[in-house]
Image (cartoon, rainbow, N blue to C red; front, side, top):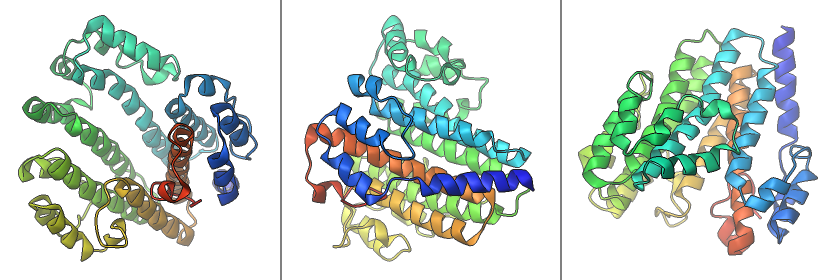
Length: 350
């Protein structure tokens, strides 16, 4: 009982320290990387960060990943129950996946041997070594096929093999991008499936929403950005055991035009990912997907006072906030107007 109260209290305290609209406006006004991190350092959530190294290297993605790991590691200290520990470990799986990407993606650019090793080492020196320890042998691979073969005895082999077949046909890493996302989601769901927790149904609901929205985005990008045949795009879908998908999934994958695609979405429960004119805006479809997922997760967790629902909703919120921080940081260089940024910001509008 004490461990439940400790984690519950910690989550609610951390949720209260998230950035507010005023903090977003101050970050938007920062004109240099140093000023940006100085502003971030004055907020409750990020007051202990040392921004100098990130400012010097403009490594905002590294900062975001390190902060996520720090948050999860901190929360794991309060996870006394075995179920909560398993769920936290499943969330941390994301960073092992991120490290694997750093070995696979450069091979699509045909970096060979030592070139690939140098590329990975430049990235890995800024990340915790535990997330690279399983994959160091891949640095000497000359092709994606060779890397996939070296992973034969790992949990990554089957989906990477399927993705590599698609890659060999069109030389696009889209199948790998999608495969990594779906693997992470499937791993989360399989973890939840094995837990004896009272909020299992609520977590399944959130994951199902995420899977639906992920499929909608996969089919759109596959069909209209990468010109994949319908059956190839459909083969990349989420396939959770407990997941009851969006009813028009097959119809969606077989659409021949963007307007036909929009008509199906417009009549579904996910019409909020369309803009005010009922159209898909390629620039902000991902932001709308994340906003809708976050909204539904927060609504679910507010009704259920269980730790895993609260933990997952909090981590979704942190993901969205760090996404916004990255957008605002990049804006130091591109200088977008507030109205343009609002299309891709998730938690707060300027």
